[in-house]
Length: 296
Figure 1: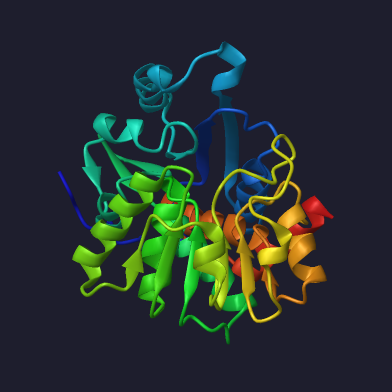
Figure 2: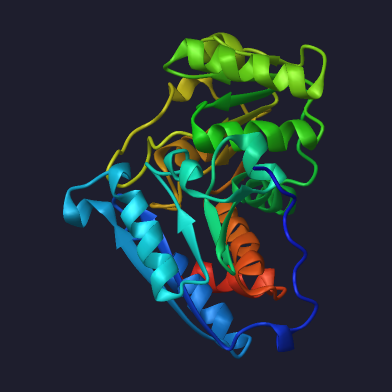
């Protein structure tokens, strides 16, 4: 069942003074979500506890989700963030989806609304929030998206909504990139999006590059494409934030590219999730400053 996102309460008086939240995913021990949410809660006079629920600690995968969602309901969680490898698998366990989550086909935020569990997606809005703040004058005429997975799909929708004239999707699974391109063209009309391209062909005349794969993370170091493909005219947006300065961003800076680091998306996602969890308006600038202190 698909439902529009519920209206947020209008004041802090309508929010509970204590909240239990969590993150379900694999390999999440370095996540900054607990610190970001708990500090913003403290600033807003909430007693907020955010629990990491790491699947790697029990050697289980998405098959653990039914029990974890049921347990969260029983223990009175207000909501959960969801990350790899559970963003698609969790959908079958929910009562409703927001329009955004239904469009993306993935959920990264679950809100327990009474007896109902409602799925949302703040990936696309989180990326847009950080991108607009960092590169407000970016040329969106010819954008390349590297990665057609869950995060890449959400960002593809977001960049088209921002007005990208042409979007080329590059993925190691070429059929997946083609399928995503076809879906986007049906939704947004025309033939603005193309999949199945190689990185060198897609970047030949590109004005911007969005990297949406795990390559560059501390546990998956390296470059997702040859550094020589980068040109000063191409802005680069990264989604990896551990480390904040990835090999791709370092190479992009050396090539003279304008860059947007992955921390901006991380904060943007948290801003959206905090609003959904609490019904309160977070101070986005304050959360960004706190994030930079945590990584700096």
